[in-house]
Image 1 (spheres, rainbow, N blue to C red):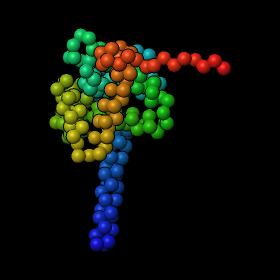
Image 2 (image 1 turned 90 degrees about the horizontal axis):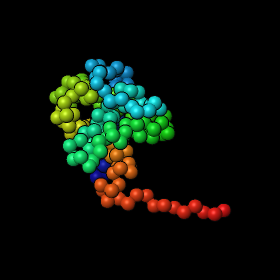
Image 3 (image 1 turned 180 degrees about the vertical axis):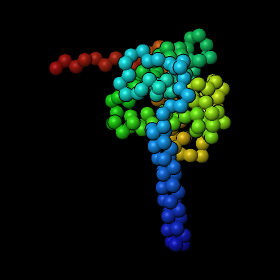
Image 4 (image 1 turned 120 degrees about the horizontal axis):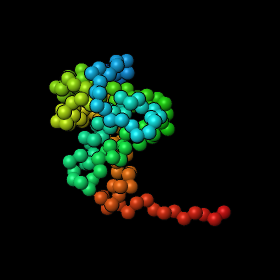
Length: 188
């Protein structure tokens, strides 16, 4: 019995290392490859960027626009662009450990890749140049991917998009949140 357990743990480690190497290789390629077929009609930041490039900002802004309820949710709901979700995420990532910021930048370049888009979702266009339906298909393909890197990459993009959107005061009343509590100053 213990022989089977030892063999099973070796297979788990081997599978883990294999997946890690594949994911690391994808991130490395995404970091080394330039954006092919860049969009000329990209979303532009409102303020100078602190970490993301203009292209990376455009990728995140396009993904956020598909992930939050603003587009098509009715006139009361602001869009991700109106709330500058991309600018908020750029400011946040500028404050984290540099390795985390670099990894997220590589993730955005990988997400933009038309080559990976063709393989994963059947759309050879870069994400920012794809139709809304193709963008939704790419997001769904990453969400359901059998590769841990793509699933966790989707979760990172989605969670940052949602955090930047729902933390905006303009959204509080729409979701029934009274806002953060007022903490009285302590006399010292």
